[in-house]
Image: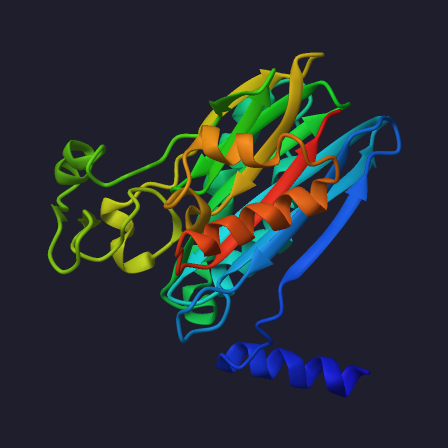
Length: 282
Protein backbone atom coordinates (compact mmCIF):
# COMPACT_ATOMS: atom_id res chain seq x y z
CA UNK A 1 0.00 0.00 0.00
CA UNK A 2 2.80 2.41 0.88
CA UNK A 3 4.37 1.86 -2.54
CA UNK A 4 1.07 2.54 -4.32
CA UNK A 5 0.51 5.72 -2.32
CA UNK A 6 4.03 6.93 -3.13
CA UNK A 7 3.51 6.19 -6.83
CA UNK A 8 0.21 8.09 -6.80
CA UNK A 9 1.82 11.11 -5.14
CA UNK A 10 4.63 11.06 -7.70
CA UNK A 11 2.11 10.97 -10.54
CA UNK A 12 0.12 13.86 -9.09
CA UNK A 13 3.30 15.87 -8.57
CA UNK A 14 4.22 15.30 -12.18
CA UNK A 15 0.77 16.24 -13.41
CA UNK A 16 -0.42 12.73 -14.27
CA UNK A 17 -2.89 12.29 -11.43
CA UNK A 18 -6.35 10.84 -11.87
CA UNK A 19 -9.00 13.17 -13.24
CA UNK A 20 -11.74 11.30 -11.36
CA UNK A 21 -13.88 13.64 -9.24
CA UNK A 22 -13.11 13.98 -5.54
CA UNK A 23 -16.42 13.64 -3.71
CA UNK A 24 -17.79 12.89 -0.26
CA UNK A 25 -20.22 13.75 2.52
CA UNK A 26 -20.58 14.00 6.29
CA UNK A 27 -22.91 14.96 9.12
CA UNK A 28 -22.86 16.81 12.41
CA UNK A 29 -23.18 14.63 15.53
CA UNK A 30 -24.98 17.40 17.41
CA UNK A 31 -27.59 18.41 14.85
CA UNK A 32 -29.14 17.54 11.50
CA UNK A 33 -26.61 19.65 9.60
CA UNK A 34 -25.09 17.76 6.67
CA UNK A 35 -22.33 18.59 4.21
CA UNK A 36 -21.11 17.31 0.89
CA UNK A 37 -18.36 18.19 -1.57
CA UNK A 38 -17.52 17.53 -5.21
CA UNK A 39 -14.39 18.61 -7.10
CA UNK A 40 -13.80 18.23 -10.84
CA UNK A 41 -10.57 18.90 -12.73
CA UNK A 42 -10.78 21.49 -15.52
CA UNK A 43 -9.68 21.19 -19.12
CA UNK A 44 -6.15 22.50 -18.54
CA UNK A 45 -3.12 20.29 -19.11
CA UNK A 46 -1.77 20.69 -15.57
CA UNK A 47 -2.78 18.63 -12.55
CA UNK A 48 -5.78 19.52 -10.39
CA UNK A 49 -4.92 22.67 -8.41
CA UNK A 50 -7.97 22.90 -6.12
CA UNK A 51 -8.48 21.13 -2.80
CA UNK A 52 -10.97 21.32 0.05
CA UNK A 53 -11.65 20.74 3.74
CA UNK A 54 -15.10 19.59 4.84
CA UNK A 55 -15.48 18.12 8.33
CA UNK A 56 -16.95 18.43 11.80
CA UNK A 57 -14.76 18.14 14.89
CA UNK A 58 -15.17 18.56 18.65
CA UNK A 59 -12.96 21.00 20.52
CA UNK A 60 -13.17 22.16 24.14
CA UNK A 61 -16.79 21.08 24.45
CA UNK A 62 -17.83 22.77 21.20
CA UNK A 63 -18.56 21.36 17.76
CA UNK A 64 -16.85 23.08 14.87
CA UNK A 65 -17.75 22.69 11.23
CA UNK A 66 -14.63 23.40 9.18
CA UNK A 67 -15.16 24.07 5.47
CA UNK A 68 -12.76 25.52 2.91
CA UNK A 69 -11.96 25.74 -0.78
CA UNK A 70 -8.37 26.41 -1.84
CA UNK A 71 -7.83 27.30 -5.51
CA UNK A 72 -4.16 27.03 -6.37
CA UNK A 73 -2.33 28.59 -9.30
CA UNK A 74 1.07 27.76 -10.83
CA UNK A 75 0.81 24.40 -9.08
CA UNK A 76 -1.11 22.83 -6.21
CA UNK A 77 1.55 22.84 -3.47
CA UNK A 78 0.39 26.05 -1.76
CA UNK A 79 -3.26 24.92 -1.83
CA UNK A 80 -2.27 21.59 -0.29
CA UNK A 81 -0.23 23.39 2.37
CA UNK A 82 -3.28 25.48 3.26
CA UNK A 83 -5.42 22.36 3.47
CA UNK A 84 -3.03 20.86 6.00
CA UNK A 85 -2.22 23.98 8.03
CA UNK A 86 -4.62 26.93 7.83
CA UNK A 87 -7.35 25.66 10.17
CA UNK A 88 -4.72 24.29 12.57
CA UNK A 89 -3.16 27.74 12.76
CA UNK A 90 -6.55 29.38 13.31
CA UNK A 91 -7.59 27.02 16.08
CA UNK A 92 -4.34 27.31 18.02
CA UNK A 93 -4.77 31.07 18.41
CA UNK A 94 -5.29 31.76 22.13
CA UNK A 95 -8.20 34.13 21.56
CA UNK A 96 -10.05 32.03 18.97
CA UNK A 97 -13.14 31.63 21.16
CA UNK A 98 -13.29 35.22 22.39
CA UNK A 99 -11.96 37.23 19.41
CA UNK A 100 -12.64 34.87 16.53
CA UNK A 101 -12.35 37.41 13.73
CA UNK A 102 -9.01 38.76 14.98
CA UNK A 103 -7.69 35.22 15.45
CA UNK A 104 -8.58 34.33 11.86
CA UNK A 105 -6.93 37.45 10.45
CA UNK A 106 -3.77 36.79 12.44
CA UNK A 107 -3.66 33.12 11.41
CA UNK A 108 -4.09 34.05 7.74
CA UNK A 109 -1.09 36.39 7.99
CA UNK A 110 0.99 33.83 9.90
CA UNK A 111 0.20 31.11 7.39
CA UNK A 112 1.12 33.33 4.46
CA UNK A 113 4.45 34.18 6.11
CA UNK A 114 5.13 30.47 6.60
CA UNK A 115 4.37 29.82 2.91
CA UNK A 116 6.72 32.59 1.79
CA UNK A 117 9.45 31.26 4.08
CA UNK A 118 9.09 27.86 2.40
CA UNK A 119 8.94 29.18 -1.17
CA UNK A 120 12.03 27.17 -2.12
CA UNK A 121 10.06 24.00 -1.31
CA UNK A 122 6.51 25.06 -2.17
CA UNK A 123 7.41 26.84 -5.41
CA UNK A 124 6.53 30.22 -6.87
CA UNK A 125 2.78 29.64 -7.04
CA UNK A 126 -0.03 30.64 -4.73
CA UNK A 127 -3.65 30.01 -3.83
CA UNK A 128 -6.90 31.75 -3.04
CA UNK A 129 -8.93 30.62 -0.04
CA UNK A 130 -12.43 30.80 1.33
CA UNK A 131 -12.97 29.36 4.80
CA UNK A 132 -16.11 28.94 6.86
CA UNK A 133 -16.15 27.94 10.52
CA UNK A 134 -19.54 26.91 11.92
CA UNK A 135 -19.54 27.11 15.72
CA UNK A 136 -22.11 24.87 17.46
CA UNK A 137 -24.33 25.04 14.39
CA UNK A 138 -25.21 28.66 15.16
CA UNK A 139 -22.38 31.08 14.39
CA UNK A 140 -20.81 31.10 10.94
CA UNK A 141 -17.51 32.93 10.45
CA UNK A 142 -16.42 33.30 6.81
CA UNK A 143 -13.04 34.60 5.64
CA UNK A 144 -11.49 34.81 2.19
CA UNK A 145 -8.63 36.02 0.04
CA UNK A 146 -9.09 35.92 -3.72
CA UNK A 147 -12.17 35.02 -5.72
CA UNK A 148 -13.37 31.72 -4.27
CA UNK A 149 -16.75 32.55 -2.82
CA UNK A 150 -19.18 31.73 0.00
CA UNK A 151 -22.93 32.23 -0.45
CA UNK A 152 -25.68 31.55 2.07
CA UNK A 153 -29.30 30.86 1.15
CA UNK A 154 -31.90 32.26 3.53
CA UNK A 155 -35.56 31.63 2.72
CA UNK A 156 -34.55 30.94 -0.87
CA UNK A 157 -32.60 34.18 -1.31
CA UNK A 158 -28.85 34.20 -2.00
CA UNK A 159 -26.53 36.38 0.09
CA UNK A 160 -22.81 36.58 -0.64
CA UNK A 161 -20.65 36.26 2.48
CA UNK A 162 -17.22 36.80 0.90
CA UNK A 163 -15.56 39.52 -1.16
CA UNK A 164 -14.21 38.91 -4.66
CA UNK A 165 -10.76 40.48 -4.58
CA UNK A 166 -10.48 41.63 -8.18
CA UNK A 167 -7.44 43.65 -9.35
CA UNK A 168 -9.68 46.29 -10.95
CA UNK A 169 -11.36 46.94 -7.58
CA UNK A 170 -8.05 47.30 -5.73
CA UNK A 171 -6.10 49.07 -8.47
CA UNK A 172 -5.26 52.13 -6.36
CA UNK A 173 -4.00 49.99 -3.46
CA UNK A 174 -1.82 47.95 -5.82
CA UNK A 175 -0.45 51.07 -7.50
CA UNK A 176 0.38 52.65 -4.11
CA UNK A 177 2.52 49.58 -3.43
CA UNK A 178 4.40 50.12 -6.69
CA UNK A 179 2.53 47.60 -8.81
CA UNK A 180 0.17 47.97 -11.73
CA UNK A 181 -3.01 46.42 -13.11
CA UNK A 182 -3.17 45.51 -16.78
CA UNK A 183 -5.45 43.60 -19.14
CA UNK A 184 -2.42 42.70 -21.26
CA UNK A 185 -1.66 39.88 -21.73
CA UNK A 186 -5.10 38.27 -21.59
CA UNK A 187 -8.61 39.61 -21.37
CA UNK A 188 -9.00 40.21 -17.61
CA UNK A 189 -7.28 42.68 -15.24
CA UNK A 190 -4.15 41.18 -13.66
CA UNK A 191 -1.72 42.32 -10.97
CA UNK A 192 1.53 43.23 -12.78
CA UNK A 193 0.01 41.62 -15.88
CA UNK A 194 0.19 38.19 -14.20
CA UNK A 195 -2.35 37.32 -11.50
CA UNK A 196 -6.12 37.74 -11.92
CA UNK A 197 -6.79 38.24 -8.19
CA UNK A 198 -5.68 41.08 -5.94
CA UNK A 199 -5.17 38.95 -2.82
CA UNK A 200 -3.72 35.47 -2.40
CA UNK A 201 -1.48 33.27 -0.31
CA UNK A 202 2.06 32.76 -1.63
CA UNK A 203 3.10 34.26 -4.97
CA UNK A 204 6.41 35.45 -3.56
CA UNK A 205 7.45 37.31 -6.72
CA UNK A 206 4.31 39.49 -6.53
CA UNK A 207 4.02 39.81 -2.76
CA UNK A 208 5.16 43.43 -2.57
CA UNK A 209 2.07 44.35 -4.60
CA UNK A 210 -0.26 41.57 -3.40
CA UNK A 211 -2.20 41.34 -0.14
CA UNK A 212 -3.10 38.25 1.89
CA UNK A 213 -5.37 40.18 4.27
CA UNK A 214 -8.75 38.40 4.48
CA UNK A 215 -12.20 39.89 4.57
CA UNK A 216 -14.06 38.36 7.51
CA UNK A 217 -17.82 38.31 8.13
CA UNK A 218 -19.95 36.75 10.87
CA UNK A 219 -23.41 35.41 10.01
CA UNK A 220 -25.82 33.84 12.49
CA UNK A 221 -27.56 30.67 11.40
CA UNK A 222 -31.26 30.64 12.25
CA UNK A 223 -34.55 29.07 11.21
CA UNK A 224 -34.44 31.07 7.98
CA UNK A 225 -31.06 29.58 6.95
CA UNK A 226 -31.27 26.88 4.28
CA UNK A 227 -27.69 26.12 3.23
CA UNK A 228 -24.33 27.59 2.28
CA UNK A 229 -22.25 27.09 -0.85
CA UNK A 230 -18.47 27.42 -0.96
CA UNK A 231 -16.96 27.18 -4.43
CA UNK A 232 -13.97 28.15 -6.54
CA UNK A 233 -14.30 30.64 -9.37
CA UNK A 234 -14.71 27.76 -11.83
CA UNK A 235 -18.33 27.81 -10.68
CA UNK A 236 -18.86 31.53 -10.18
CA UNK A 237 -17.52 32.48 -13.62
CA UNK A 238 -20.59 30.87 -15.19
CA UNK A 239 -23.30 31.14 -12.49
CA UNK A 240 -24.68 33.99 -10.42
CA UNK A 241 -25.24 33.55 -6.69
CA UNK A 242 -29.00 33.28 -7.10
CA UNK A 243 -28.71 30.85 -10.03
CA UNK A 244 -26.53 28.58 -7.91
CA UNK A 245 -28.99 28.72 -4.99
CA UNK A 246 -32.02 28.12 -7.23
CA UNK A 247 -30.42 25.12 -8.91
CA UNK A 248 -30.01 23.14 -5.66
CA UNK A 249 -32.67 24.41 -3.26
CA UNK A 250 -34.86 21.36 -3.92
CA UNK A 251 -32.01 18.83 -3.58
CA UNK A 252 -32.00 17.43 -0.04
CA UNK A 253 -28.68 15.55 -0.13
CA UNK A 254 -25.71 17.91 0.29
CA UNK A 255 -23.29 15.80 -1.74
CA UNK A 256 -25.79 15.49 -4.59
CA UNK A 257 -26.28 19.26 -4.47
CA UNK A 258 -22.53 19.91 -4.71
CA UNK A 259 -22.24 17.46 -7.61
CA UNK A 260 -25.18 19.08 -9.38
CA UNK A 261 -23.52 22.50 -9.16
CA UNK A 262 -20.26 21.25 -10.67
CA UNK A 263 -22.15 19.48 -13.45
CA UNK A 264 -24.16 22.62 -14.18
CA UNK A 265 -20.96 24.65 -14.38
CA UNK A 266 -19.54 22.14 -16.86
CA UNK A 267 -22.72 22.36 -18.93
CA UNK A 268 -22.19 26.13 -19.02
CA UNK A 269 -18.72 25.55 -20.52
CA UNK A 270 -16.60 26.33 -17.47
CA UNK A 271 -13.06 25.23 -18.32
CA UNK A 272 -11.47 25.87 -14.93
CA UNK A 273 -11.12 23.44 -12.02
CA UNK A 274 -14.49 23.39 -10.23
CA UNK A 275 -14.68 22.79 -6.49
CA UNK A 276 -17.84 22.99 -4.43
CA UNK A 277 -19.00 22.37 -0.86
CA UNK A 278 -22.64 22.50 0.21
CA UNK A 279 -23.67 22.61 3.90
CA UNK A 280 -27.36 21.92 4.47
CA UNK A 281 -28.91 23.37 7.63
CA UNK A 282 -32.33 21.82 7.11
